[in-house]
Structure formats: structure tokens, C-alpha cells
Length: 100
Image (cartoon, rainbow, N blue to C red; front, side):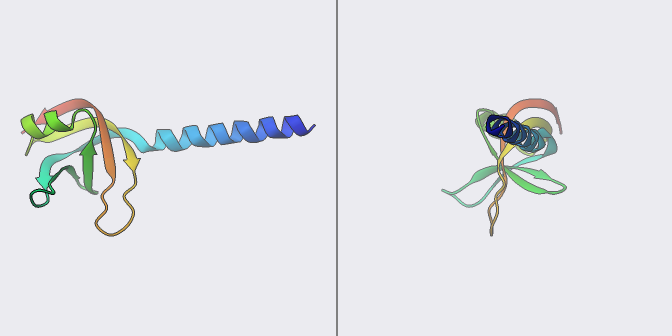
């Protein structure tokens, strides 16, 4: 009986974790911009709902080729950015579309 309860609790934990992780990923649209002051600049995706700091393997490509452009990307929010001046961090996994 005790092992059945443990299995049920583990299943609920797995389902909850899966739900939380899927809620953080998705498609995001906005303008690519470099913000901050040297030497502390960072790349952002400026959206209607606020800025998100771009991180991940596509960060350099977005900064070099798409700065100032409106893009649609797929990615996952890996850090919520709670607190004063702490932006959510978006790990970009794919560039979907880019417009001027």
C-alpha cells in the first residue's frame, strides 16, 4: 500500500514538472536590441510585454545579423528575472522569421 502512494506522488511530481517546463517554452516576437553601457551590454528581445535578455547559442548570430530587426524566435525562458532590473532570460533555440 505504501509503495502505491509513493508511485502516485512521483507521477504527480513528474506531471507537474512537465507542465511547468512546457509553460516556459514557446514562440516570441520582438525587436532585437543591444542595451546597457559598455562594458556591460546585453542583447534583448524587445516585446510588447517587456524586454527579455537573449542567451544561448544563437545570441551572437542575432546580435551580428539581426540587430534592430523584428524577429520571431523559438525558445525557453530559463530564468524568470525576479527583482529590480532583472530581466527574464530567453534561451533562443531557433530563428523562425525576420522582418525589417
